[in-house]
Image (tube, rainbow, N blue to C red; front, side, top):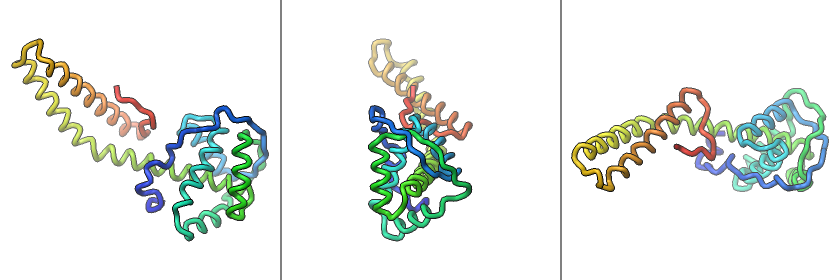
Length: 204
């Protein structure tokens, strides 16, 4: 999986487009793993489970369209083998998503349920991997940010002692130092909790 998603940083960050689309209640046979993935993706993305269906399906197609035949074959084989217990439940999706699932599943010679199940599991794997990579990357960058904060604090102290009160550089440097301090604080919290910062996180 790491090799498949490396340098694909846009994955798992799609903007939901189904908010105003008409809903339908449809029965799907999904594995327990896929159902868990659906709930967790809803939390990760901060969207309804209806939107998760659309986003997971589109993410899967986006992921596979540039991959080789072996990867697509792996996806199909994985889709055929729905892990664990499979249950038939009603799920809310948009009409467009239902149609998209059916037509795309047909392209892969899968049933709609198999494609949806595998898409949810794949999307969850991709998102989880990217979140883990984000934490590792931030942990690597934190020492450099400490150095940057220390430098900003040093410049701010020098200006406080030497520059006049009307020097425009003083408030500018203080603002930069404050921003770096906020970033460091948020990254420290992220690493302590082991929960990645959100996609739309704003450092204050």
